Image (cartoon, rainbow, N blue to C red; front, side, top):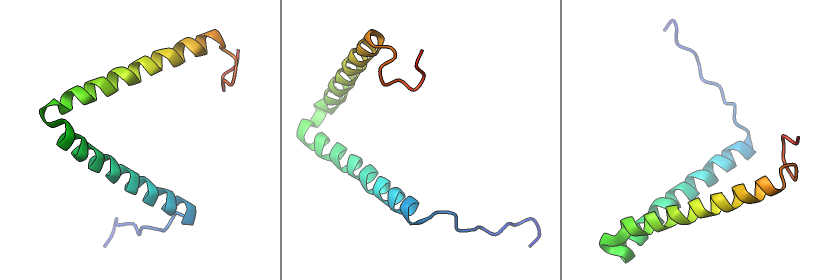
Length: 78
């Protein structure tokens, strides 16, 4: 048919391997969520809230450290 293009193989072995590993790890996250829901029951929302708060505090700590040493290890050094 006119207008249809043929797909070409563009991924090499390394890229296909990385995609497969990403899929396996991504599926593992859903399994862990199911286990967490089984352990926490109705309080599973609290565990996610706690994890989010912990991640936020870690991000603030990293921001403070990065502001103390602005040029150390930075891609965009000043």
